[in-house]
Image (cartoon, rainbow, N blue to C red):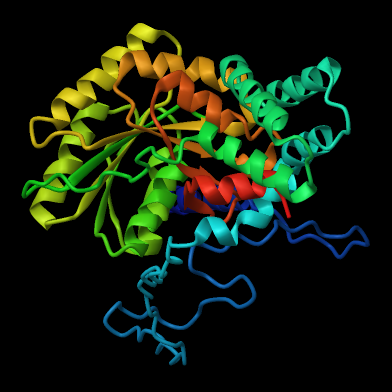
Length: 402
């Protein structure tokens, strides 16, 4: 019995010893605390703030729901209300009356034409008018673009009258020259611009000419002439091949209260001319002015285009006037253009522009002889009212001078 008890005690002691060893070994695996050291401690950088967090201060306060967040109040601004201004309507101008315009513009004409008149008077005042003097008179007339045939006629009449007259005073010479030049210009020709159809439809005027002669500007100035004479006008911008021609014509029309019928650039000129006449009839206008294209690439193309415009317009009413615009500064070269247009369309009247810028006033005589139609209007400057009805007497007076 004692032996059994002793064995149990020994077993308990052995088990206890073994348990202590196990516990001791587990304690050795735990890392002991580090002793203080002089080496600096490296720490990880703070975490980046999340979206919506403030980087300066930690977000320790509880988050608010979207319902709890109050929107900032908009500060009142003292801004003035936006006012869209309507474009002001163009002021309607009152054109200058046409009566006596050429007399008013005579000084401009005489400044450029005196070379012709004074040159002739100087030559005729010579004591002896020999053949050399008459040749100089011929040269003076030819230089002024009077033309060969008219020059020969004038010289022959002057020679005969001077021979009969005998003694020649300055006043007699001036009277003589004035009479012969007036005869040459043709005072008997009807220079009225036809703007009355005699029907219930408006008078229809078609303006033709080469671009660069002032054709569109002349059409606008002619509208002013008609308005000044108490006529109501509708403009047709049938020159669709030159950039800004329709804009230019519309600007002229707006200044005198005339409406412009236009179409797209490069559109059909005949269609626009047709619409212009249609609108003129609907409005009860007195006159419809149609500005046409002035291309001279080929005579065939020009003939087709102007012929089509004429045919289409005449479906409404007959054409009353076809005015050819010529640049007086081109002299005899302008006659070449005149011939082409005369072959294409029946010209009824001529408008000579820039007559104040040339000393070749004889072009008036030459172009009338070439086409067999009168000069009806002349341009004597850049001003809006510098287009004047042609008056042969005032023109010849300007040629001779005071």
